[in-house]
Image 1 (spheres, rainbow, N blue to C red):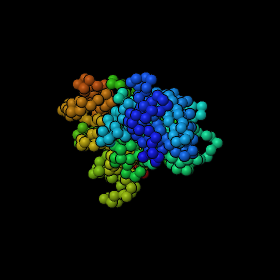
Image 2: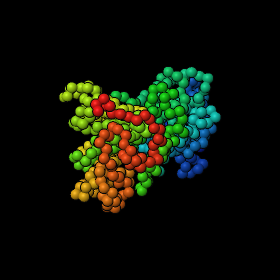
Image 3: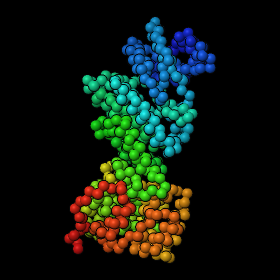
Image 4: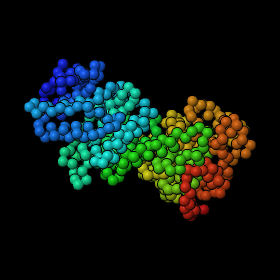
Length: 497
């Protein structure tokens, strides 16, 4: 609450023009009222009253001067400014913004606002941050949080409180005033350095994490991955992680950079129906996920996942192959061979490496979310033939969902049955891989599914080794997405052969 008693009450008139109707809100330094305009009947304004000592009065005056100079549709427009030195009161008259705060909106959805709203919300906030940060004298907002964002009935965001905003002064090493809301303020706002545009970007990351965890977290701490909503777009996670880096130089350096990354990744995620993965943007900078799902037991999902991972490792860098099943045994057996572990004695580490591919055995969904915030260019998920909710969710959300099934005539119904069972979900990104299938089976399945991304996989006895025929198929599958920077030819456990 405001520390000093207000000079206003219902019916009070400010500046001989604005009659107070009701209180809208209050904080430690100010109180905001709704007022009607006596000269423009029916017009309402917000009147912000601050009563404080001369030091705070100077801050409020600075805020008024700064806001008067700004012009942006997501900022309140200042129309009048009054000072009353005898009482220590200062009044700002500004646009009254109809709507509710994002904080209240979140409560209405019990923390879980529709996931499709999150990226548009982020882009709106970035729009106004970019405006503030690129002014001749950059303005740093410093208190981006749900209570300071107003959401209009048209679902437009507006920043409503500039009480601790400041102009960036390049000659300073630290802020003289440390202000901000705990949990949303950047570390440098607590005395470790001067705030700049990157401080607001940290607060944006905190805000996004808050939205993505249903209001439970605004700081990246141990275990937060388990609270990130499962249906959210994957590409948000590495973006949030980078925004929340402790050191400003490790974050995105401008709002424009974040806007570009969000748009690139969003465009990549929403490839239009009828386009193959080869038509997706090749400059996507985030982690891409390939999910390999077997239609039935023995269909070859793990074999295909290994072959795809080593193909990607030969073409790019930083590939992780994840066994998304807590009881699977395939990777454990492989790790025994790679590390020379006696049979039946599990290693204490779930990660091991084969020819540049990081294998993660018996991994949970929370681990996958954590890996998405790392430096991997590709994560390949081996889902086996399990069709439990968690693995099916990962398959549906992947950038490249690969279905592995048999091309035999008597097994084709397994594939078409899977496609029909998910007909309410978009399937334009799906790719069907049929080991050892004849060309006729591929043509028939393409026709039955009305889908052109059906591929026959050739005989490939060692998935760790390069095979020309297999590479030709995978080149087609990933055509246009990967820059071919060929590395040395890999050999898997050469000493074993």
